[in-house]
Length: 341
Image 1 (cartoon, rainbow, N blue to C red):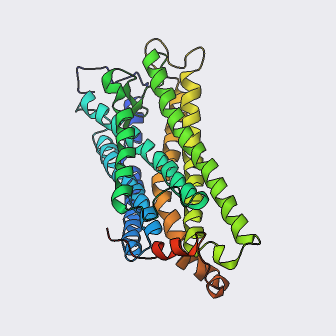
Image 2 (image 1 turned 180 degrees about the vertical axis):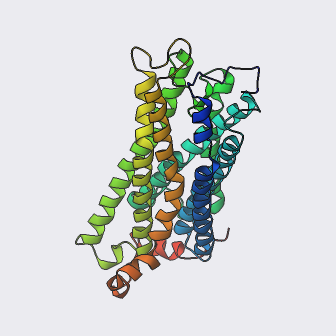
Image 3 (image 1 turned 90 degrees about the vertical axis):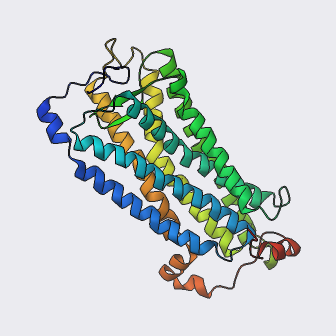
């Protein structure tokens, strides 16, 4: 495979005929282009939506921008590597350095959207259930700092195999690198850590979003005065968050559960000569492809779950009297001013 350093290569029984059949760059390139176009469209809509938005909505849109930007860069970088490997018939001529880089990228851009989803759910939970527990005007700078912190956590986890905890190896059919589903202690620890943080993010999003939606429903349909009812934008933000959570759960949970099950399997799935059964290799590839759909569907959740789109589909909603804020009048007046950032 073009390198004397074989630490990132595991045995794969692929014949030259199979390799030539598999190594077609067109599917990977088409998949990547669709995802990039979707994220660019969402970024364009987000930039226009942020102009003149309220403090709360501006902060939420900043988190969304961070999420879409993460998905876009993830597809761009990983897609470029996968397409290039298909073009050279799955020969890793750059050796383990490129494999290690792709492994870090895969973990970083895989975990970041899940952590960002949990962060957005936490922000909306506090904004809806405890509106006075945080500053009313959460600046865009603070939101971007939070996004940066999430990126730092995901990057720190991705660098662990380079520090000796776990390994990155070339995966079947030879076009991508990811964490190793082996029986060594480092592989087990890293695999479980990745699966745990990803599952924890999805679970936390589910709990916080459920509470937030229940709170909105209680206020919206309760006996409170009209001025205590939620605004349309609050309902819209929660609809988008629920959509992001559902997409993340469907796309990522099969892979996260599969990783945890495989590294804990007894006897180990990986043989002593560092080879996985073909059935395990194919399952990992399928679950990875399903997880990749998260980067394509995330932007469409925002694009389709906007008030303008929903009102076109349900015209009666546009004739409904404008809902007011969950928060008291003085707080609402400050929230509706444009953000100075």
